[in-house]
Length: 110
Length: 113
Image (cartoon, rainbow over all chains, first blue to last red; front, side, top):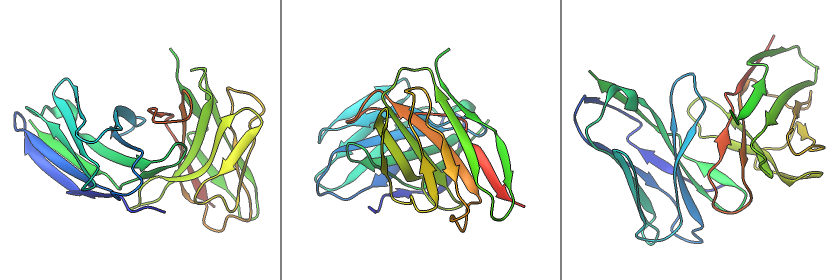
């Protein structure tokens, strides 16, 4: 079982603030890094799947970067809105098996 | 709308009973997965299936069994051998193997009476 760590565990930001969180994973034998958003009482929703070192992906106000050599990925949210409140999960994985972190719980205060 | 349906939403089990959690998808995905979530832990893989009539153990398969007789369906049985079954169970699917995003159901919460 691989160790995937996310930080911080939780954070509160004011509406309009930009924020970012970190996912750390083993730097050897990299295959893919996934990001998911999990809102309360809903199912996890895929944000990004990243495979290449230096990859940057963007979806609206959310973007992610990947550094496979040092084993980390950042997720950025620009101009946070209350609807961004959710738990953000990262998962490091092979072809079949994903290892999930415990998530970063974001609360955006109106 | 295409998606994954898990049922029931809440399930209670008596000691010594087997229970089966349902997972159905209409996304035409080949691969399906079962995860377990416990407080303070990340999702952990129980079983996965890449194709009909084939499935593989994940990290915590002991005390669980699955079947994949149809592409759309991947039921999970929690057997009496699973000593600590109380958890939240999520089913997911993906279009195939490889670095593909997974689509999740809403989950089933299993509790022991």
